[in-house]
Length: 181
Image (cartoon, rainbow, N blue to C red; front, top):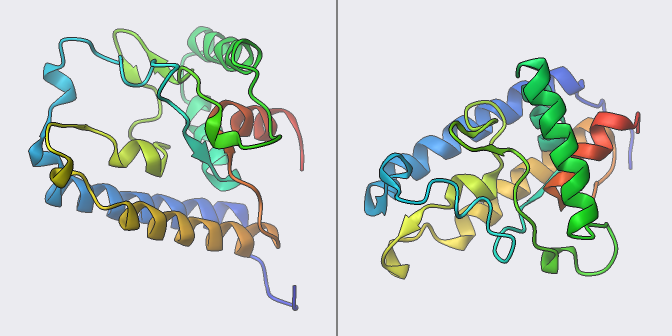
């Protein structure tokens, strides 16, 4: 990579927040009115905890944002979530090998009775576009998610000086919480 001044992680997290907020607003304004509300769901969290469905991947920077969001969670609950992250990795054999998009798991960030623990401060792009749409034509186009993920990928490269693989959410969080790469 040529000599490019890297962004500080702090600045990159601010930029990520702005990207995420703008994207969330667009999805909310243009698409979510066609979806069932999570607040009225008869099975809250079922989609987040469906180990046959969830395969959310995040970038390193998103994992850092999630990790920082978890710092604001009560200590006992944060420990419980860390245990769930480890258990999810073990239970579902989550790894960075092979086709990681085939690795499904229950999201360790969903807390029954509360919801997504990082909904406001670290919600991944893939989760932002997800909602209960009755008609396929009401879904946000895949291109919106892909374009947003490309912006985040570019931000990662400008922050860390290289492309970083997007990893399954539990593995990515584990990696940034407990390593200093």
